[in-house]
Amino acid sequence: MSINNNILEKEKLSKNDNLKNDDVKNVTNSKKTNNAENSEKINVAEKENKISDNNINVSNSVETNNTSQNVDGNSKINTNSKVPANPDTNNYEFKPLSNSKPKSIMTIFTVLVMIVFSIILILIIGFTTYNFLNTKIISGVYIKGIDVSNLSKSDAKYQIDNLISQNLPDEIQLKHNDFIATVSLSQMETQFDTKNATEAAYKVGRQGNLFENNLHVLNTMFSHVDIEPTVKINEDLLSTYLDSLSSQLPDTVIQSSYYVEGNNLIVTSGTEGNVVDIPQTIQNIKSAVSDFSCKDNPVEIAVKTEQPQAIDIEKIHNEIYKEPVDAYYTQNPFMVYPSENGVDFNISIDEAKALLAEPKSEYTIPLKYITPNVTTNMIGTEAFPDLLSTFSTNYSTRDADRTTNLRLAANKINGTVLMPGETFSYNQVVGARTIAAGYKEAPIYVSGEVVDGLGGGICQITSTLYNAVLYANLEIVERSNHQFVPSYVTASRDATVVYGSIDFKFKNNRDYPIKLVCSVSGGIANFQIFGMKTENDYEVEISSYQTGKTATAIYSEAYKILKKNGQVVSKELLSKDTYKRH
Image (cartoon, rainbow, N blue to C red; front, top):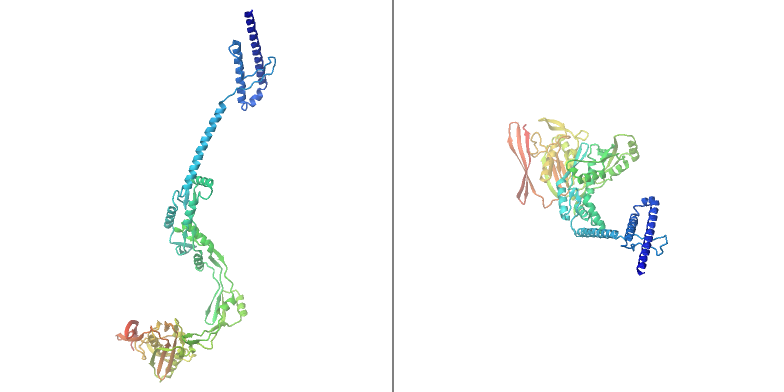
């Protein structure tokens, strides 16, 4: 009985297992049917639901395997697939099998990311630390085309200074058409600001925060930075020089001008022309210096066209107008203040403007001179405390006409005052020897012969003055000897004049004015020169003598000997002369 019961129990369990397996199969078939119906949806979302599909397939496979195992009675249904307790129920819930492989991949990926991040972080920290501690110019920095990477500021400056000294000339040429001028760069204080340039090079990659600096350093490694030093120049000096060049240009503007000629004021009109464009030319020079092109090529002078200034006749009148000034002197200390003639237009301003209304290249405006009440020559010898020199010559009183000429010339000179540095001209002071001036016919030398001529004899006044000037130790500017040795002085002690061609000139080389006093009376022509003596004055001796004689000529020399306390200080050759023999 028990055996039968056992058999029945086994059959019952077997039957129940078969029923369960059939249910499982039905469920699986139902799942497959649903999958077939939704195949299009699964294909569209295949990639997104790939893991889910795999789990379903795994579940189906497990189910199949479980079925076959249960048939053999060797296995049970997978506990991961839960079956409802009620065998008659048609709804079954299945969950995918757990899979640890994606978690492993994610773990490996995370580790790799962390390693890479750590390496990058270490590199950034190392790069930042290196840049922070680096005391030299970073890589990729150039100054004026010279690579100064990894150099100190002083080394970089040395290299740039050396480059500049090798390529910058001492002088550069400036050119306008065919006109060439030169300018000294050193005189214009031209220089490159290499100090600030190297400082700027050093600051590359050091002026921002750590991130900005690192980024700048990396960028500079691949895209170089070239720093151009600033060119410095003294623009005031250069402007003055360039302004002076304007007047030298062949096509320069010609401004209106004026000058005095005798008793007339001559006003000239200007013409259009070019002048130096100073700001642009300075920029051209700076550019040529900066790129060293001025070493082999001239710099172009920039010019601009300019119109001449209009003639301002009122301005000209104000410039030439002068009130007469009386001469005067003081005795403590001794000072002489010379007179000055007044000058003014001899026509009104309106009349002068009317003259300028007509377009002409030149205009003439008459002038008038106003003599002061007290001229310099009127100042007496009391203003000239010392007699510097005197010299006399003899003449024949029987020749009345010649004596008249002597007195006319002497009177013109008498009282003349020469200020320090002023030059005396005999022809200018005495003037033309004309009948209108009162001159008479008297013997003169013409072409080696003695003939009567107007103003004959006045050379005796010239020779007398010449000797007085020598003894006053004044500077001789111009002197010529006669054709024959005159009777009133020895050879080489004479001085001849011819109005319009031969003059006698000397200069007051003293620090105080001198006054010439001349007289012709009683057969004696006399000159006295007054002034003020100083401690530097010398005793003067004049030595003259013949050095040779032929049948037709006489040769002579004259010397000036200066002495101090009786001792000879110097001996100066005055002249070597040749005379014809009578």
